[in-house]
Each structure stands twice: as structure tokens, then as C-alpha cells.
Image (cartoon, rainbow, N blue to C red; front, side, top):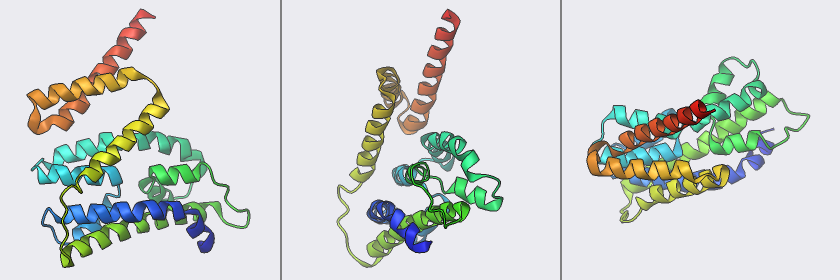
Length: 223
């Protein structure tokens, strides 16, 4: 089973390892001990949100704002979880870890692959989740250790986070194909940047949600 799971998760390995290494290198610029990067990969385990946290921590943003921003950024996982509730079954504590370890990549695997008949479905999904997190933590650790013992010129590496969010934006556009939510997000971001620079991200998220809910309510009233 382990050999099968490794083969199935190889695409995740090739994606998580370099991305996690980039995170570890960037995280060390904050001046924390190297193992903090590993602990973040273990306890937080949220690729895009961890890159976002690096920039926010570097800017002196409070932990509350980071937590709220992380929640909204990863809120799409709520829908992933709803789609997999029946697939996970009544698996006890293992189910809790499967929920915690659910990412875009593991969700894609679990909803597309066919578990070989000779393997237990619960254990197979559990190993996919565990191996994927191990790949990420390994990348974070390699990057942090490399940055601690070797001299890197990290100038420009912060663009990795920008590139990651750009890819997420493109993926959202391909899924939604509606211009209005993106226009609302753009306007809310501009307003927040001008009026609430220190709390730009949190305010822009709140404004976007208020605007979208208001438009939905107006359309509902018209019906």
C-alpha cells in the first residue's frame, strides 16, 4: 500500500518540496529559530496562508488579523470538507486528521483516484494525507536549515507569494467565470489600501463580503 500511495502522491511531492523550501528560506528572514518553520508546517499546514503570514509577520501585523485572514483565505476548504463527509465515513479521530490535512491537492486526489480494491479506503486516504503533509514539512525544514547554514540572496523571493496568489486568482476565474466578484474585490482592495493601509487585507476581505451579501440580498428582494 505504501508504494502505491507514494506513486499516487508523487505530483504533490514535486509541488510541495520546492514550494515548502521557498517558504522555509523566506521564513528565516524573520529571525525565528529554524524549527519554527517546521512547526508551522505541522501545526498550520496551509501553503498560501503560510506565505501570507510571512509578509504579515514581517510587517508587524497582529496575530488576530493573521488568523482572520487565514480563515478567509482557506474558507474554500469548508466546501471541500462537505463534499467528502460521506467519503470519510465514521472514522473517529482519523477523520479529524483527514479534515485537518485537507488541501487543494489532497482533495483533487481523493475525488479523482480509484482506491485499489485490495487496499482499505480509510487507510489509503489517511496515508495520502500524511505523506502530503510530510512532503510539505520536509520542504519547510530543508529551506529553514539551508537558510540557517548557507548564505542566500533572498532578494526577489518574496515574489513567490505574489506568484502563488496570482495562480490562485487565475484558478478562481477559470472556475467562476463571473467578473463581478473580481471587480468588487479590486475596488475593496483599493479603498482599503488608501484608507486602511495597516489593516488593508482584513478590511478588504470584510468589505468584499459585505458588498457581495448586499448584492445577493438586493437581487433576492427583486425576486
